[in-house]
Length: 394
Ligand SMILES: *Cc1c(COP(=O)(O)O)cnc(C)c1O
Image 1: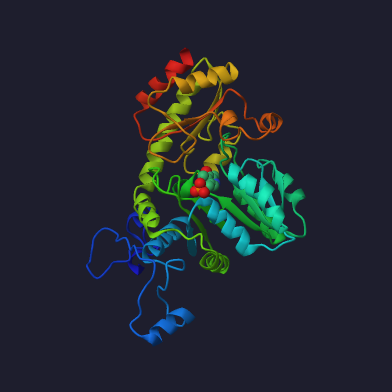
Image 2 (image 1 turned 90 degrees about the vertical axis):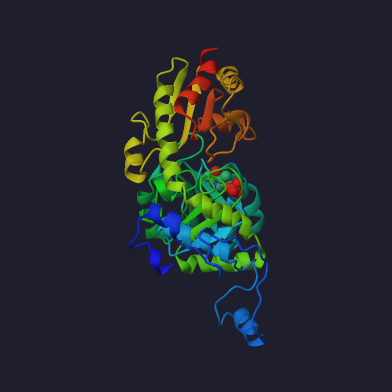
């Protein structure tokens, strides 16, 4: 590992090389350690491992070498001291809250966060005495005025889903730091390939590894990256409560990371071309993409991200009927709410991912009946355009 310390190697190199735990056989590709427990050479070593006096693996709910490899690799990419992998992205968020908060404390979150996160904050956490105030993510003063003496965490996603609203992470970090509040950023949409929240001043980064880190839509996984003083608490929660990442899933994600930089670069370039093309279509009213100069936060996007990312949303003229026509004419694009895959996907948020919130709340957040979201993959641009053109001109 020391050979691949993050000070001397570029992230693209670390994504391929760092964190390998070689077995005695000297395999070139990462080994997958499918074992739930580990053996000790004698009683004294068993006791020392259990007490923590001797470092090493004990049981896979605590640690497993394949999971450790992934954690080391992802920590390096995020520029974090440490990383804890979890069973899913939601498990990463739950573990963070459970490990770092107590009943009676308070969260401030941006309004446009992932649906399940919103549900957790709104419906689940109040039963354990934790309340959340939701604010407009693009308005920094809203965060400042929502903070209370008992606020422990400010939680944001940038860019947001599906309207690609950005939160100014560096500016928000100044506010949270001054108040002694932890800034937690869900970096799922950008990944460390496009955005480094810890470098911008955030305290913790959350990942749904299910999305771009795996990159090929195979497994669920999650992670929390940050300083050891915080991740140690999260680790203690996980080893007791159990939403640990399986070694199989860790191996898949570890191998996914090897192509992360090249995928994000190619998918972002594909997304930019598609967004520019969509802007030229007469039946498209508006395109939401942080890499377009027409995006209201284009300058912030340029400062904060190395590209616009791979998610493009757009509104078609004619409401739900017109939007569904585009979806139903797709022969190539997958009709699914998932994202982060090399296969391009298309979603109608108002009737799927955001279908359960009230029409009023949807309208308030700008999720209109004509809105479509595309998570751009690696197919040829010409084929993506041809697939969409049928529905846009029908
Ligand atoms: C999918 C997603 C999650 C939840 O991750 P799971 O792996 O599905 O549990 C959290 N945040 C964002 C932004 C997501 O897209």
